[in-house]
Amino acid sequence: MSTLINYKNVDIWQKDQLVLKNINLEIGESEFWYLTGKVGAGKSSFLKTIYAELPIDRGEGDVFDYSMNLIRESEIPYLRRKIGIIFQDFQLLTDRTVKDNLMFVLKATDWHGTDAMEDRIKEVLEEVGMQKKGYKMPNELSGGEQQRIVIARALLNKPKLILADEPTGNLDPETGKGLMELLQKICKEGTTVIMATHNLGLLQEFPANEIHIENNALHIKPLPKPSETVEDNI
Image (tube, rainbow, N blue to C red; front, side, top):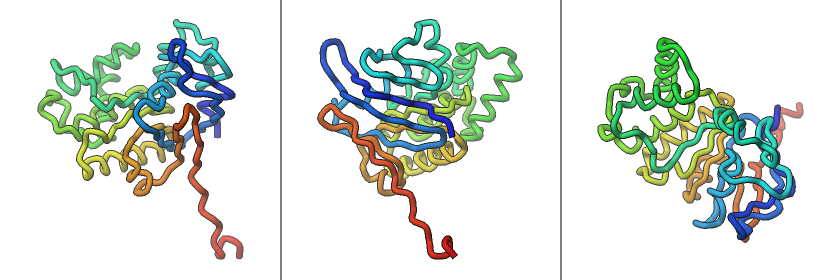
C-alpha cells in the first residue's frame, strides 16, 4: 500500500508565528483519519499545507509525488486535482443548478467532451444518492443535500485523497450520521479521508485513526487493530 502523505520533522509557520512543530506523520491509501483540536489549534493550517496553500519551509513534506518544500507554482493545480476538498460552508455557486456547478469544475480542470462530462456528473450524483437533484438550484436543497453535492464535487476527478473541513458542523445529528456513512463508504472504496471535526461523538460512533492537535504539536492515535480471535489461531 503506497504512502500519500509523508511529513518528517515539519514545522508550520503563519508569517512569523509557529503554528505546529516537529510533525512526523505517514498516511497511506484507503485510510480514514480524524483531525481534532480546539479552534485555533492549527487544523486548517495543517490541511492547507497538504494542498499547497501554505508552504513548508522547515522539515520534509511529501504529498503524492510532490515535495511540498520544492513544489513549483505551475505544479500546484496538478496536485490539487488529486485532492477533493469538502468545505463546511458548501461554497456552491448559487446562480446555477447542481449539474452546472459540477460542469463548471470539470471545465476548470481541463475535461473535454460534453458526453464524458455528463457521464461523470451522473456517476458522482449516483454515488452520493443525489441522482435526481441535478436540475435543482442550491437554495432548493436542504443542508444535508447541499453537503452531498459538495462531496460529489470533490469526487469528480477521482481523487485519492479527500480533505473534509467540519463537514457535519452545520447538520443535524441524523443527517450528519448519513454523511459519515457515505464518507466511510468512499474510504472503503479506496479514497483516503482526512476529516477535521469538533464532534468527538463521531469518533466513538465511527471509530478511525485520529490526529489530535494540542500545544502546537500533532498527537497521532492510530485505531487499534482488532486482536486475533481463538478461531484465527486454530
